[in-house]
Image (cartoon, rainbow, N blue to C red; front, side):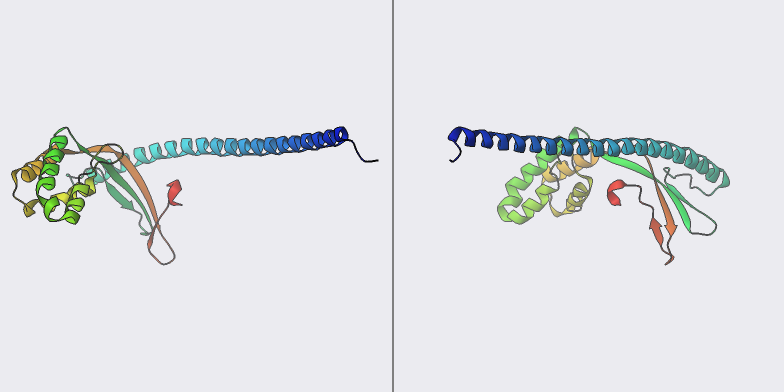
Length: 208
């Protein structure tokens, strides 16, 4: 005599319960393992961040002392802005201090961009759509709402191409509104490899 419908339903329910329990167990094991890995990596990252911060401070103090020594020794130009390199006697180890800056354009750049866009839209766009798109991209703002230094410098190369007052005034305002803000010092470490060429020690995580 075969199983009744009720018995079949009971077996099916039991199988589904076992499957659900197995899935729940697998889910918990996965999440526990994931969370353990996250904790390990974050803990290691925090420790490394602290070490890097302390190491950078050590580099700053040491290179400041070195800069003072070089200046007193007469090897650092009086007009140096703070960036310099030091190399050992064997000429196989080098430390470089780089002065990092950030380009900034003040409120005058808004008027400048409006004038340039007005000129490009009225004249260049009608004659040469491709050139218009190239030039207008030079004054396109990035996701932060800032002009981009390299693009603006490329735009300025075309200053003598047109004599429209809007074009000339726009470029003048862009140049006036520009300033270079000092962000801080960064450090690079180099050694000569077996081929005798300088090789940079990568401390930038994404560059490794």
